[in-house]
Length: 477
Image (cartoon, rainbow, N blue to C red; front, side, top):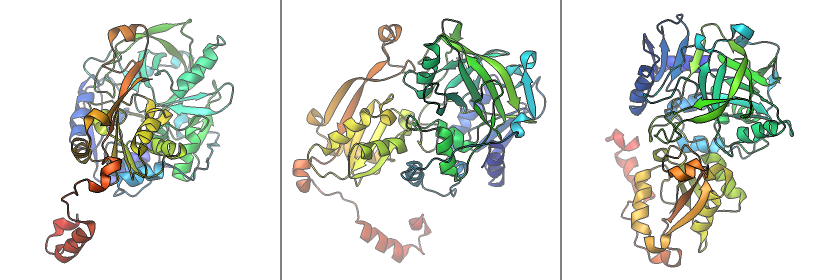
């Protein structure tokens, strides 16, 4: 299975990797990442930090182009992004469970006890207003359900407090949040592993809204067509990817035992919307890392720039949820980059009955995959490309009569990261918001009389391209 080091080597062979030396880990690294991500630039590897050994590196801007994203999951680099979504739907999913091995590269160095020191790595402070250094952005946070026994991997932010203590912020309703509460309700700490440079396919799976009860390790193994090799953590018994670069084991303390101020952090919404607040901490028991370790970073950047060139976090699972709910005729689903890959849902469908569009929108807003922080749900006809916001907005303004095409749903699943959350709701932890639904389909009851679109038919376009394509190569691109 492709590990981070192998992925970076592929990027280098593709002339899609920029290696930089002497960059400051404090904000400068994050700013360079932001500037080059905005230009759809190469993957980045930073080395030779002041006061750190040569070879202790940070890698960012990893999966922010479709080409690199496809590479990371073992698909041809020219794969269309909607084809990646279709693959990620895993409609014939069969779990490929991890394989336990006795050792692996991640065990080249193992620090325990007084030797634990998270500052041995050049952990960045990514944004100017961040409240500290964040070691966990491109991270897989691994826990085991104490009741059901299943292993879960999620992506949550991890802040370094000191040499052996981290913060770990988890939004309410996330699977890892449910698991930790089961331990805490019994007065126990929650065992946790944090993999700070996981195999690309595992990190992308951990970031997805994989259904409850399905392990992201099994999901990643299925997508990669081979199992992930893991070692068993000596303190937690949890699986640690054997080919990882940097991982830790620890205990996630109940809030009654210890909390520390966490945040602020520039988040995926494009704001420091979460502020700072006392949050529970993780006491680190062991640090594992390879020789010349690489810390993977995926610092959130103001939308439409996004850590994922293809929104696999929720889009494929939302498509599945819609079909599981009996919504037929779905032609495409996309959670748009302008909304950070979450806040704007576009559904393309072929209408078959009155109310079909609203049925799809309500199913999306009420699903686990689509419910979290979805603020705008737009349903369009099958001739509209849901990945193209210009095409979608043209449909919105040309096909919707807003007096009856717009609905507002109140009390939806939110987070304190929401910058629009009113201060009084934030203080009482009422983390909800309203979602707008726009039916931008041709009105069903008179759709046959709707004016036709002034675009050449697919057949005529194909004929012209076939006739003139050799003379005008641009036509074939």
